[in-house]
Image (cartoon, helix red, strand yellow):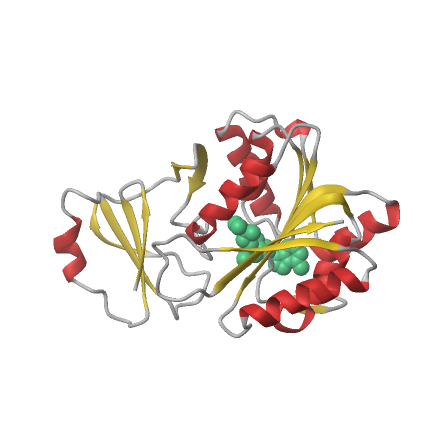
Length: 266
Ligand SMILES: C[S@@+](CC[C@H](N)C(=O)[O-])C[C@H]1O[C@@H](n2cnc3c(N)ncnc32)[C@H](O)[C@@H]1O
């Protein structure tokens, strides 16, 4: 069972198809609403209301001093993946004014918001227009001028290839792809294609810049993931100056499915 606590609204996800009724007894004084979705329901299914106030509109939550819009009606996910909290903070702490930061597979632009709040100029890439618009709403919620930043809709790999061709580089790049993705010409799988993805990112990273490589999969062993990332970057003739493994937030203690590497490229 997973309980995401969004400013008093609980989003409960369960492996079983029955709601764990005991949660209602725990919610008093802590939560205002409980919504629930069994994990195996189609990703596009909105969670159902089970207790407390109904949440009829999207609402803002705060994390690391930043604001993000949450929408329980949006299907797939509700706006931010809470297991990326420390990685978002790291990006916010690392980004500096005058730097260009690229956020690929960006979803609602959480990493872009953190980099932009630190004064960096961000480019946000996602297949979905809806999520790019959500990103701009998150920028507005943080008093950031979206007009001073870039959003590119379409395949993130094709965009990085286009940037490489044009010689456009970035100081920092966030790679957080879905486990599997398909476009008209090719497929991407985290298990098989991460080396190429990391290499492509390295080819547009400034010397001394960083790549945050994330893989959200149980199947890939952390050592294999690091091997893939390092070999992909070296294949492009770039030097790996350092690799740091970043932990998941401590409340995600059941297993470490999210692997995150902070790689500095020479
Ligand atoms: C796992 S989520 C990324 C989460 C995000 N990094 C965050 O921390 O909130 C996957 C995102 O990748 C996008 N996506 C999937 N395939 C893509 C592709 N080939 N190019 C660009 N975006 C893609 C989806 O639309 C979705 O928003």
